[in-house]
Image 1 (cartoon, rainbow, N blue to C red):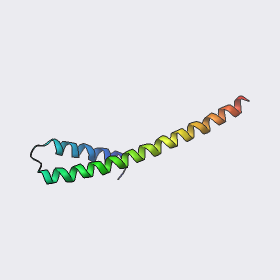
Image 2 (tube, one colour; image 1 turned 60 degrees about the vertical axis):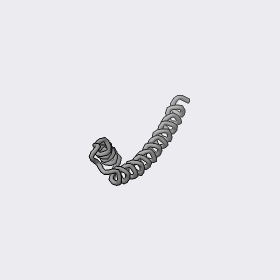
Image 3 (cartoon, one colour; image 1 turned 180 degrees about the vertical axis):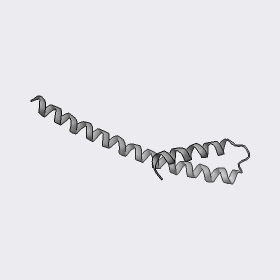
Image 4 (cartoon, one colour; image 1 turned 135 degrees about the vertical axis):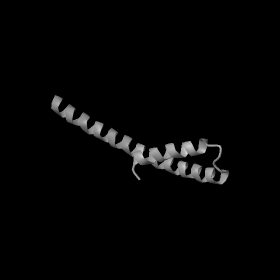
Length: 68
């Protein structure tokens, strides 16, 4: 599942958890699913941040070389 679909699923889970008619056992399963999806999303965002940092550093080196 891609990042955008995971965010959409988290939104669905949030709606279901806000519903007072959701049985507790179902709510616990949804909460566990949300925790897992959240972890996956955080890992993906950390990877993206690392990639962006790497690109910025490489671009900085290129600009420094052109300035010299």
